[in-house]
Image 1: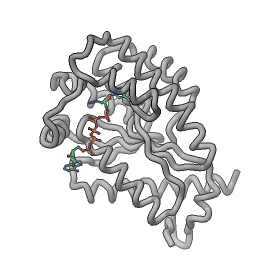
Image 2: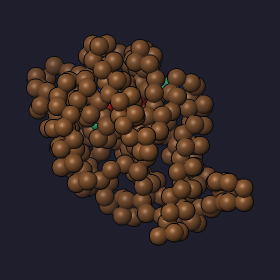
Image 3: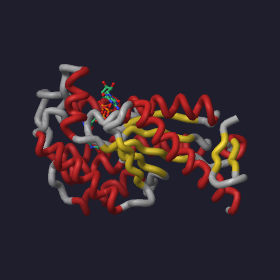
Length: 236
Ligand code: Z5A
């Protein structure tokens, strides 16, 4: 049976995890940081070793409407999209995702692994596109109805390394991948700033290492959080 050892003699077993409220765990980072691969590995680990209810989702594109919005947002050359229009489309995708997927799954006690959430909008539209951060915060609050992540894993890798990983696997690029290196560097700065501002919520993962080494860090962080969440469920 899987267990978390918080300290000597302190164990948390999976029957206690099942009594917890649902949790939203978000994976963030620049292109090619490895979110998609790590979410898959993390999901397999949670199902196999922790045996909890897990669901995997993403933004944009976590609902049927979101799939259409994702295509509009990322397709190259279809039509121009002004920066504020882009911001509003991401917000629309998020609002639908929160109502249709996130809230109902959290209510069932599910651990949700979500590929990107509100920090992406700060990093890409705020730092990348230079849109007003206060406005984005307000829009995020409207789109989420106040639903924040319980834990955000920032997969930190050099922009050049991430882009090289992406370009190594696919010749097809989307609207954001086609942006300049300077744009992607501003996005990275945005993540570094968010990490400095929210040290409780955001945990940095060294994503420059091998996939196995990155997954090991993630499992250690998530195990530690599960133990804390179980402990706080018991005291409430
Ligand atoms: N966006 C936005 O602007 N504003 C918003 O509010 C939101 C999103 C929510 C789509 O996101 C776009 O939406 C995104 C920002 C914007 N920009 N773009 N483009 P996405 O998450 O769907 O797309 P992405 O950022 O390009 O992610 P991705 O393609 O899914 O990549 P990834 O998840 O970070 O990495 P991966 O698919 O797991 O791995 C990429 C490759 O690297 C693959 O070949 C792996 O085998 C390899 N890889 C992964 N890890 C490693 C390690 N550790 N070593 C070596 N190679 C590795």
